[in-house]
Image (tube, rainbow, N blue to C red; front, side, top):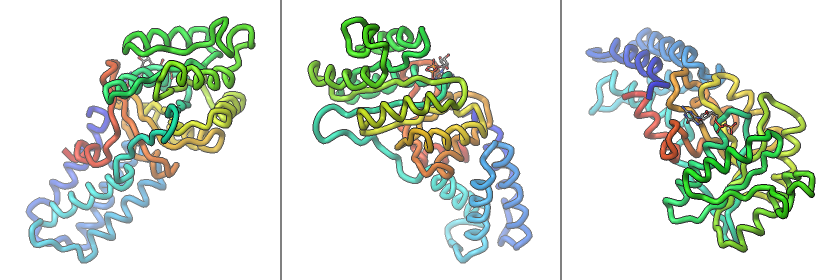
Length: 305
Ligand code: GDP
């Protein structure tokens, strides 16, 4: 993808310099490690992640991993690929469904992260897996948020549960998002939906009240999965925001949005290592189908393509 174009090019140049070498000297390995370090830093990868990555590559390149089948340049590519897969989380982390009753997925993240769009994309993806999702509008802060989820739900043909007069949490309840979330699960049971996707309120910046609201919803409905949605284009801020949501709300997995953007993409490479939580889904465009499980191995291959 465009997002990693610079990183891809720089790594390719680094590997090119090794081509034709019969054996790598310590100086070759040092130079390579330095170039990889610069490439990652320029791509906005968080410094602790860069350090760990480069140290691992250097150690393995220096070590006894001599393969008869691969020349030194190929060996470095292989090591870098494997280390990329490692920092991206290793295995693909799949959704965990509830054993009984509807699976509850809660989305959290900043305003503009792409949460509402993502909610609909996830709903469509689940529908294509044979599930019957229900979207839930718990962002009662922004006047237009409920409407926006309804529009997106309409695009993918998935119903939206929203606080309307008559529904719990509706006007007569003062628009209480915790009540809406709780009532939506009852609604899902009544209407035989097997997955509930709760879209929560976002703000432009990290905000204690917003965190508390999301934490309250989480405590009340005990979701099977809490997904933190983050715009991959916001660079290092993605890592700071992820940490704040981890501390304030807690989450099980990360969704990276706007991976089709032309930003440097370091966030995508850092968030797993920094938070310890896996990237589970990737959103990569304006179309409702621009969405899939996040596969660390495929992402690493694309970066090294
Ligand atoms: P929310 O405030 O977190 O609910 O964010 P929205 O879902 O409203 O998205 C904010 C903007 O980002 C909208 O203009 C979306 O069309 C756009 N957007 C969302 N996801 C993606 C994506 O994966 N790629 C691109 N290019 N744009 C996206």
